Length: 468
Image 1 (cartoon, helix red, strand yellow):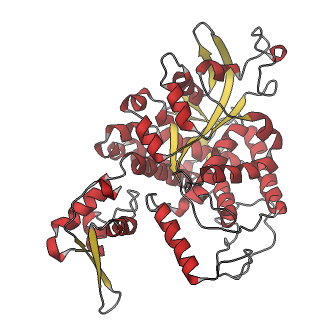
Image 2: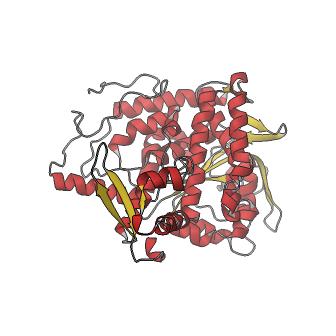
Image 3: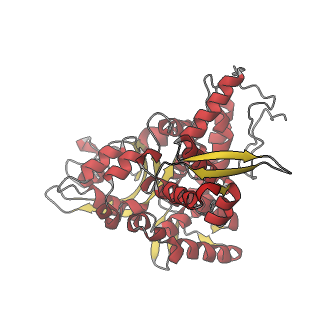
């Protein structure tokens, strides 16, 4: 399989730009690992790193930004979902407050998406994913990256001060404290150490949490205290990074009930591959991606209200019921249900962002499908972080209940999960492998006609924290 040497002038117009190169396809990837043992070991390591992640529906990448993320995937160890989510947040901020959707007839929603990228230290490649997205953005909107991307959220007053204007004495251009270009109210806050921000928000008197809730709605921000100020017409996006352990340890039910974290889109990520000597990306490639993104963002800024296309209303009704109905209650888990309670507006915001980047004032079926796939992945990411052991323990109990005869893989997929494992964000193969690796179950393979049957039997071990 050969790969075209050039990228279309406007990549992303189809499902795929062109086939993403992979090892063994004859494409030059630079120095390669030829030792079979090394290749096998790397594959096993990546599988181990990613076994806690929910499966990714390919529909997640069915958008212009998704195609960019997929096409750059062979050149980086970053998770393509990380790259997609970062580009999504940045594009929504860059288009400004003009394009928007209305939810429920009265609620105006700007195209702001706040991904909180959750990955383990060292193997999450969180920063790597951000750098890949930043490279594209730097070719598309160099001034935006330089002047509108900031770090260091600490308090509500500090956030409001970023938008200070000359009509606030000492806070405007003359005071030298304004961080954004004059007349520009777009801010993308990149916070690679979100655990530190969470700790600040817990301090008595800190107003950041309340200010962020207002910022997600768009428009005016105000703080009414000794350092009172008002920031008008703000358009703020956030890309946050944290580890699963830090998030689970620091987030409480009170935090969730307060409504700050259900505005975020949790995205679980992990190292996607081993690239000991990665091949550099051609600058011409990034230039073409950047030019296409710049054109689309410019067109998007001219849009106003974005509505759902008539032929997509039925699709939206099904998605609305899925994310807003009784099945979206977090399986009875109050904290999880709070975390995902804004799935409906988040989905519509994402779909409208995809539509705006396609230069369309109408959200189509393809936009909704891609957005819903990403929101499902987000919900399953939250489940993987907040309830990492429930699924594993339940599977072990199911196998243990069968006694010495064990359970086949078919029993697990069609019996225990009733054929709904993928929809629930569960990877049975990864869970079974984890239980085998920790010695909780044994696997036997029986040859016969057709495909060999695998049977899993519980050992004398009982469920313990060693399954973590």
